[in-house]
Image 1 (cartoon, helix red, strand yellow):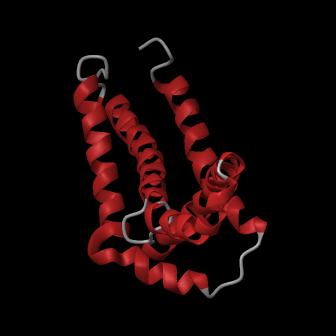
Image 2: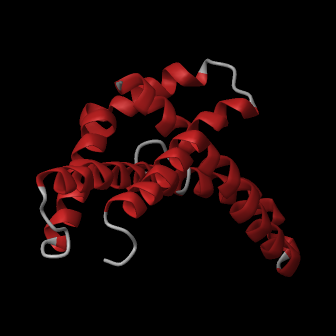
Image 3: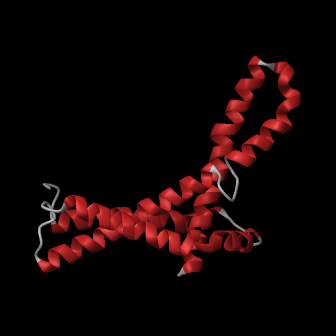
Amino acid sequence: MERIWNYLFYLQFRILEKYSLKFVHNPLQNVFFYFFPKKIKRKKKMDNAYYSVINNRKNGLNLGFAFRFMNLTTSIAYGIILLYINVIIGHEVKEDMLYFLIGALLLSYATNYWFLRRNDTYLKYFKEFETENFSRWNYMYLFLFHAGILSFGIVSIYLTVGFNL
């Protein structure tokens, strides 16, 4: 389970890494060099700053966003599980919605911390996954994971308590 979780986390990080380079770094760099053409000799410094702040594997922004995406998806999954438990035991969610949400968020954070952040487990798996060949079809696993949990969450809410909370 830990390997699969880290594989999905690695795919999320790779997508964020690719799109931040394509849609953030390169356009900003082009605009900067358009207005300041004499600063083009600082391109190497700008690239180093980008990779040290945005794509840093220890504490970069893309790593934080990938962790938040995994946290959001697992929060939805735990919310579904808690929702079904509440329906089975006959407890109404309206009364304790705040505790319900806090419980789902804490379980989600604990799961992600246990599988990803504890002793920097993800770094070990990142090194292992970097040696593998990736195609576009590998990202389908990540899409199916996020879309499946999201759609199952919407259907579950509709089937258990409805949308009239």
